[in-house]
Image (cartoon, rainbow, N blue to C red):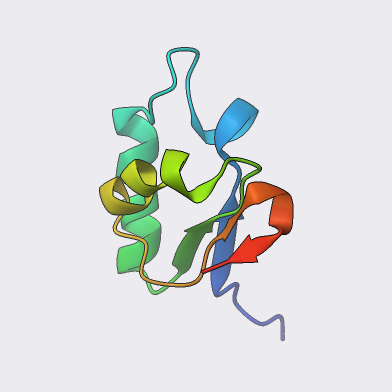
Length: 74
């Protein structure tokens, strides 16, 4: 049997953010559904931490995340 996914890591630019630099309500909804179903959701981005904190708070990220082109894991 196939094991279930436990972690989804999402990029910001060109993936999660719209053309205005926001996370759409629809994406927020499905991320919350994923979290409520037992999946951990995190962010992996080239952005520095200072430009990522708002999105981490908005999505209630509680697991490690990757910033600064992979040079920092918090």
